[in-house]
Image (cartoon, rainbow, N blue to C red):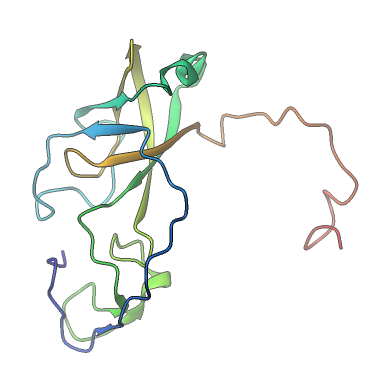
Amino acid sequence: MVRRDEIRTNEVGVEMPPATDAGLIYIGRIRTPWTDRLTCPRQGRLDGPLCTIEIFEPWVAALAEIERYERLEVLYWLDKSRRDLVLQSPASDGTVRGTFSLRTPVRPNPIGTSIALLVGVEGNVVKVRGLDCLDGTPLLDLKPDRTLFTPIAPRQPGDDEVGGPG
């Protein structure tokens, strides 16, 4: 696991461009057992520890009907991750790969995703298993797992075309 300012052999960092506001809003906070990146799992497991997601007002009403789904896609902001590496050495052996070919949290926009098993909802708290982020991680969004979700929109012209319409 890469430490905050560590650059391994052959890794390449870049100067970050000035930040611009993408308009992201933290809609909640994730509570997990992990406070250190070296002990946090690299992939969540559906049989992993119970974690909670606190939803902030005014977004609590958006939880209506979420219990219809057994799994959720959880999107979160990896606020402790560095953002400047373009080449990384995940095995620390000097061999490098491009950031976009890895599932590393070290990326220009450190958005994390997990498929979580929904255990229950109590008020503004969603209980899940399957996360792989640090305690206190900001929540960006919750969605039903796309493999469980049946689209409600009727088929459109171009749905079956390779590359889509146009």
